[in-house]
Amino acid sequence: MNAQEIIAIENKFAAGTYAKQPIVFVRGQGASLFDADGVEYLDCSSGHGVANLGHAHPRVAEAIARQASTLVTLFETFPNDQRAALMKKITSLVDGLDRVFFCNSGTEAVEAALKFARLSKGRAEVVAAMRAFHGRTFGSLSATFNKKYRRGFEPLVPGFQHVPFNNIEALEKAVTNQTAAVILEVVQGEGGVYPASAEYLQAAHRICEERGALLIVDEVQTGFGRTGRMFAIQHFGVTPDLLCCAKSLAGGLPMGAVLMGERVKNLTPGVHASTFGGNPLACAAAVAALTAMEEEDLSAQAAAKGEYLMKKLRAIASPYIREVRGMGLMIGIEMKQKAAPYLKALQERRIIALNAGMTVIRLLPPLVITYEQLDCLAEALTEVLSTAFEADEANE
Ligand SMILES: *Cc1c(COP(=O)(O)O)cnc(C)c1O
Image (cartoon, rainbow, N blue to C red; front, side):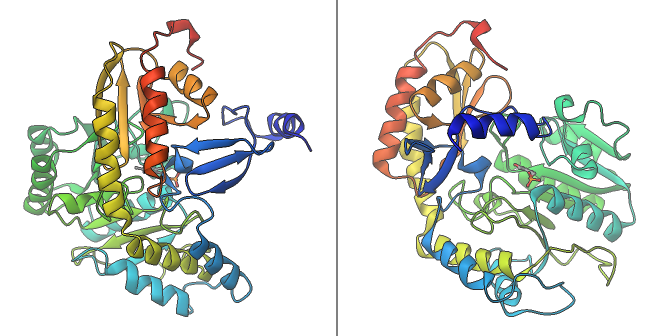
């Protein structure tokens, strides 16, 4: 099959829920992706924040291969060596979160956290933030703000409300003795790369404690070194009651997890479960991924490289840039016009980046990206971002 045939097949048989790009990628290595003709691209998307360790990481590849021929599936009612190793490792990453529930994706982690919060408190209400993105199944979609994701799927789960992000007063008003949980991203990702302030997160923690609600932090995108710490919340000295993670947890294999503290209660056999959750294959991959992240000090790499890139981006003198913001290697460049033509121009220069809303270019490169690649990226961005694109060139 050549590239054109592959594209035609996907266009014909896919459900239609994705806007397909005209490039076929068949291989990855570090921060590089290679198309069917062997042409190299710089991946600044990491598969939407999954490949923090880069593509084809040897330690993860070895663990997957070994475990694939050992034991792939085992329901969590039976203990397993790989799962036990992962439980020990993942709960050692954050102080005060000593238990974990495993699932298979970000949205499932959020669903589990919402269910656990309702069950713990015997309360139904959830307070989420405007611009929040928490996933696309009904519970997490109800916590997601943007109408673009919600439209056509109502009625959603009752009991959810959205308050302005980074606004302490609004949170004070919204959280009552009926609130089961407040759910927040530490840096809003899909919503446009907006970091929470330290004061806001600390106030959210205090307000939850005062009103007897639980604080859920969604680190699905910010987790595992992305922002310069293992978890972004660790920048702020706040320990949530529930921490959702997924994306890069298992080095690219599908896996999600909810870490929880002692205020989470009533979790007894049968209240929640997942067929694939905690399967030995994903667990082995996650142990390898977390070990590699520690060995390579991936968080420190993200912090240093993020600072390096941010400096270069802030030095770009383009009248079309509104703001550059972010944490570590989670960076948003807000344009005064639509992001789509800029992403297309970057793609023509063999750089894969993401949008976050209509006007924000989002960079989520693998944290193993080299300084040489960062220089390449900064050079391409300097050129591309200084171009005025007509609004009608936007293909979104
Ligand atoms: C990607 C993402 C999700 C959903 O994860 P899926 O694995 O796609 O279900 C939830 N929350 C945040 C913050 C995300 O970035």
